[in-house]
Length: 80
Image (cartoon, rainbow, N blue to C red; front, side, top):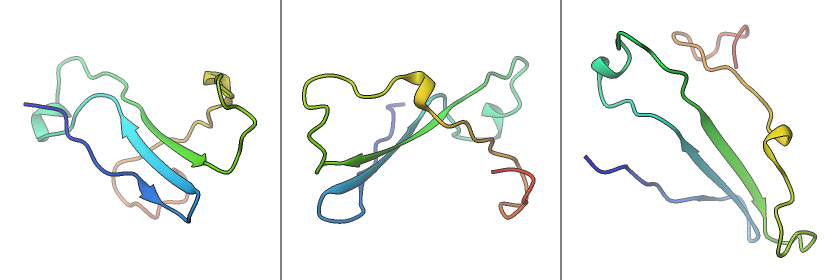
């Protein structure tokens, strides 16, 4: 099976949100593995108006904000 792709989300004329992740979830077998692994989801907010980093990376892994996804109620205030 090939990886799936989705379009980016246009916020306004110059700003895009791109979401992607690691691993897979194609069915219950993917979450009941004998050796479950940590998977990651990333969201990149790209403001194309900025010209402060035209040729080099502006951020590194230390700049990422960690959030936890919890199973169950998506409105549960104890998880984000």
